[in-house]
Length: 582
Image (cartoon, rainbow, N blue to C red; front, side, top):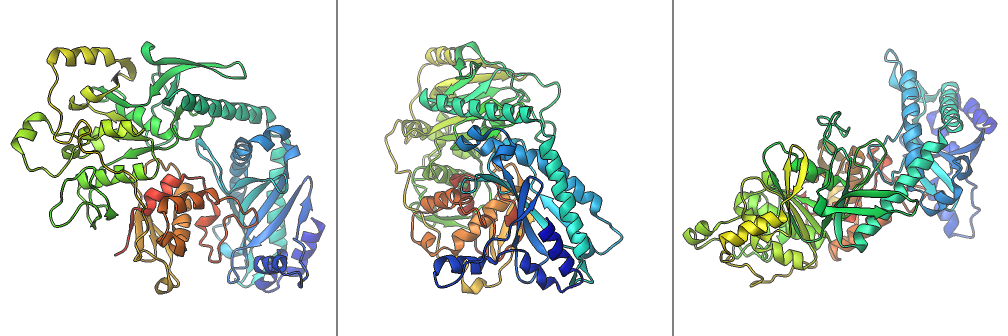
């Protein structure tokens, strides 16, 4: 810390360019590593109490805006063995316990009566209810340390000169807050989070081994409080029906009981406000592991689950719609494109894209679907002979045979009941298994003829090679393009836009920022224009946190790249399909 204090004292009232001396220049560092003829500049590391810290720049034009990396030895947490096996719960616990105090401290240092440049400013990534990797705290195996990432802006005098005294004071107060918080942290809560995470991983392994799509533990609280992610106080705890109850015995002696949903076709039905959509929403968020107190700690779903919507007006580019359309006016169905898709077309496109992306579970709610795509009853089939749409009823069993299951919420039509492997009735948030009862009803009513294309008479290909169109490219004509967020779920990369409001599985701004960053890289990669798009997306997501030196930095840092959160390759793929070029 003495070295850092000395540097800041020397920098006081100097031009802000002197702040580059706080860190090792990234480009020089890499060139030194690649050339044995150049001396390698040592990384500039500063030490304080039981931690160390380093700096990284975000651009030559803004030397006062830096990234402060705080390195926390894994020994401080007391769970060295667990950290080596699975660092994710430890990363989340650190970020969850440290970001709040750090951001609260930053608020106390702000003075609204002075220029913003004359005071230190910093921020740390915050967490939500889900446990996943975030750039705000990563375990770096090469160093066997946790790296905290903090955005730090050094104060300036007159907008040009460094206020070294205030800058040093801000860093020291921040580090003291971190060290005090680490020394006084409840290590037992970390142990509980590690144990919970291990149970969640074990349950997911159990689901995969036993052919289950999802597990909802008894006692889970599914309803949320308003528009928040907080559990609703006084909500009815979930109770599984006897026929679907499974018991999961874990290695630590814990035995969990709850509802297990098998592969195939599951129909959720019931009256209005009975909890059907609430259950479906919980299953959608079940791809994530949740922290203690969320109410959905043991609501776990197949991790490739994808919720399907009808999206009026979405763009479609060179998509094979032959599984759901026999023809379309004005064009073929093998490589269909439109700037404004209808509800039925967009829903069909979403299913084709999800299946291509590797989804093995489709979640569909009748309320957010196109009726003419979902069903066509016997009378309408007789009346309308020339109908291009192949309804989902005629494909749902074929998809199930291809290991793509469906969980469907219906309330106004019983058309899907005859295809269901399992029927759940919800009344006042209580679940009842009505599978056998429905089968008896159908047996008494007698069977009806299948659809025009039903019963596997017309099998279709569901996967194909997909690439980004050549017009979607951030090349020379987009030099100097900007990245913007027009509203909460719309990304603008220069003139190219992506409306992600129907990717409801994304539950935080950080994930939206991550997709913007990954889409930018995808559009800049030449190989993404000619290769398999799914493979490109999966590779980008897999490598997102690999480089521990500058995991979130590019040559043109926009700011949003500094707070990345884990997403699936499927999420990036679905975002890429929504790219629109005016």
